[in-house]
Length: 330
Ligand SMILES: CC(C)(COP(=O)(O)OP(=O)(O)OC[C@H]1O[C@@H](n2cnc3c(N)ncnc32)[C@H](O)[C@@H]1OP(=O)(O)O)[C@@H](O)C(=O)NCCC(=O)NCCS
Image (cartoon, rainbow, N blue to C red; front, side, top):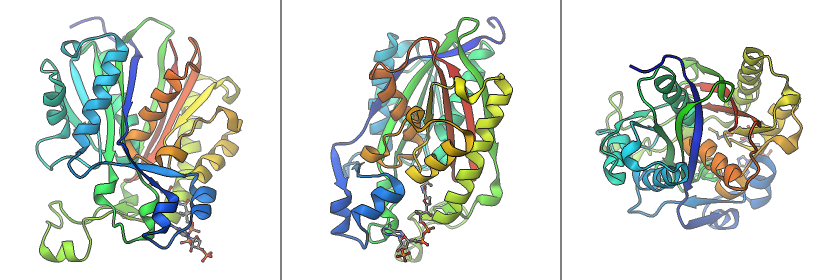
């Protein structure tokens, strides 16, 4: 056992999004929706869609390899792989086991975390505990989802999601760098507001569940908006309190990408200027577990992040699950 309670930092990022693009205009041709409404309310112009033979693990493996390369480590250095996904390849084994094999990182223990749109935030918190306690040195966390596979392409809520994966490598850091705070929350009373009713032990898949489309996601959009705009500020204010930081000291917010309206309202409530809120939902829509790490990779590789920058992460998702964290970038 190594030294206890070590600081934890991010040493590499990566991402992968599939090639096929569904624009809003294309969706107009298959469902009753319109480009203007989607852009105004959700901030989305287009989204990426996985190929028929492309599973969540394929996206995850590509993002993971990309992050390992960016970190300067080799696949054999990875001690633990955590996959945050709500669209696993199969119910068993875990998508993490499949990804471990695809990237040939056989020294790593691998498991999934299930927190839907908050999955990457939960995953990075778990990674940090293992590193802080000295159990593992290098952890690969991947957020990956293919919601196109659980979307009813005949319904107009097909506009919300896209497919994609992002990843980051976590390692131990020096004092006064890396993660400063984490807060995670769960409220299971929200369990019907975003759900995939069939295919699990409660309602196993049958001919009837398939005919009724119960293997597709169902979402109460208004409840998501109302909850998101309340709990994101709550979680963010809590991590600010925990660290003693003021909102003015936050250089960037790298949030989950539910909708532009939810993020605008959140920024207004916490008093953060909009220029400091990073978004990319215009290109990718909501990739669920993929949103934060894809955006982090984009911001990191654009050269925006400077040593010492204070970066805030925040997410809300099905469950309800939500939370926030703060990192001092190195
Ligand atoms: C989606 C959202 C904008 C809908 O707003 P709402 O007022 O609750 O929705 P309503 O069903 O009452 O519809 C309001 C209007 O939008 C229109 N609308 C709703 N969905 C639409 C769609 N996909 N395409 C085009 N128009 C749509 C309705 O027709 C209605 O128009 P009308 O006033 O002319 O009748 C809002 O609920 C929201 O932002 N939710 C968050 C969703 C989210 O972030 N999900 C992803 C994270 S899990």
